[in-house]
Length: 233
Image (cartoon, rainbow, N blue to C red; front, side):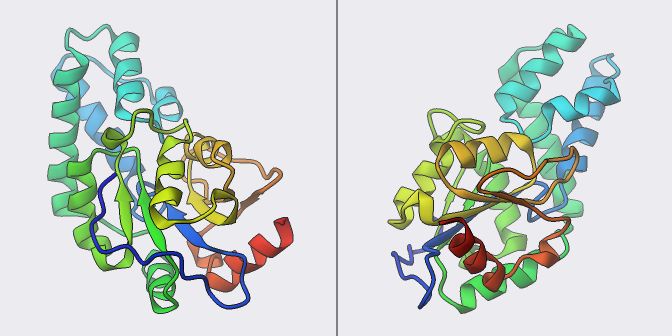
């Protein structure tokens, strides 16, 4: 876990059960899920392999060890996981340096959470080098801490990243709202005991107990998150 700005502590908005908001990055705040797939396609093309588009649903939202490992096995490419991880991170960092669109509603939601002093964390399966680059566009001042996929023993779909973030904010996971876009991230958040708002990006996600599905971040604001916590207590 690496804190990029001083932690806000456990200040809770008056009259709300909400203690903290934990946000995924790729596909949730920034429109990058397609960029990851484009980079994977380009890297494997350079290795002489064509990726099957159906594999996109397998690798989306997962840690690089899982997604890259799957693609190596599926293609039979003669490359190690460590070598491939470097190529993918290099390619992605170069791509987002040229274009990094935010998801609709992301800037407004982050500004609102900051304005109301809601402790907020960025929790991603991406590596630290990628998170730090993306933070330049998102605004590091919006996050009390950030958790990268290469900084926890087990990343998503395990609960470790969200448990780490909640602990870092001094919050009870059961009183944290998580915003995610993939089944992998949703599984991690639910395993940690958090309330989940799913905003599906590539693959559909169905509603469930302690899980609300919306079509866009434009439907999510602080009032929505507070109401969610109250309804699901």
